[in-house]
Length: 440
Image 1: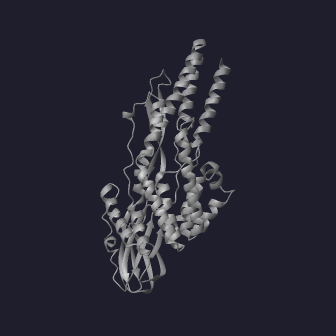
Image 2: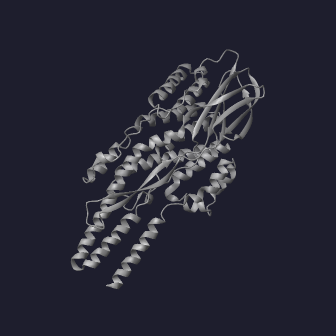
């Protein structure tokens, strides 16, 4: 009997170690994070592409190809490798679409242990902002029509976002009648219009001479603020109202700046009671929670060599969009986690009962092993791309056509954080959009 107990305990300890070690340590990202924040994009790309490095071996594995394409695609964008960025972001978008198509038919039967055992399928905000940055890739490559295609794709995705997960939720609920949907978060994402996408659409349409389409996107930008005041807590940037009335003989310089880094996920553990015999009458839920990362930049200003200056104002809190669009998916995650945990605990309780019929002590031990297995095998899926920005700031000024030097200064609570200077050409007609980055 002692030998049996000892083997069971060894088995339980082994399971605890194996499942507790699932997932990648955030420490793996530290060198890449630091390189991205300091603008050392070549070093960051080298770390990601190094097939023998820790990041490639523990994070960017075969089941995390979407993460690889997203992170590399964004860093390529910051580095100015727009063609490479487009290739990566388009691959990520394709895989996200394929993963969602598969998941609808697999929500119930898969992921016996935890969500980390399946391929990463992407978050909704990642899928949306892929198109924002791919539109900028096309713009920087001189292809305004391609840029507009990306913006239209994003707007189409937003139409389906509100009820994207309802079908999957119903399947999970129908498969497990022990779950009371009234006790679980079932909130749908209330985000159906992106001011950032509408702003870029307005500029791209204006740049191709389609004033009526530019007007429509201008109106939709205003509507985005009205529809989601909990996301757009700031005022509409003052420069927006001037975008469609550039005086004859003048050019308009538009500046867009991206600051900070997008939220990350952390694991939250919640104990829940279960209607089963002790010790399987409780379980641990391991759930992912999206949290913001600290940001240094608080405001920014553009300064021209003519002495003119203008404030860059917040257009879209991209971190708030990430958290809002996660709500609907979070409800499905909770449903799946509860259903999976109940199934594991019920199996353990049944095994303990069967074992206890022949030996009471063995039954108690089997129940304890089942409890350890249920708790240890649940690890929250905290995978998430790390290099989307957190804020989009915009500003603009009308100028006589010509060449200018423009510097964007980024400020924090302690003063100047970072400056970036560019020589720009301002044309009377067409789009003069310059992009600046500070991810500190």
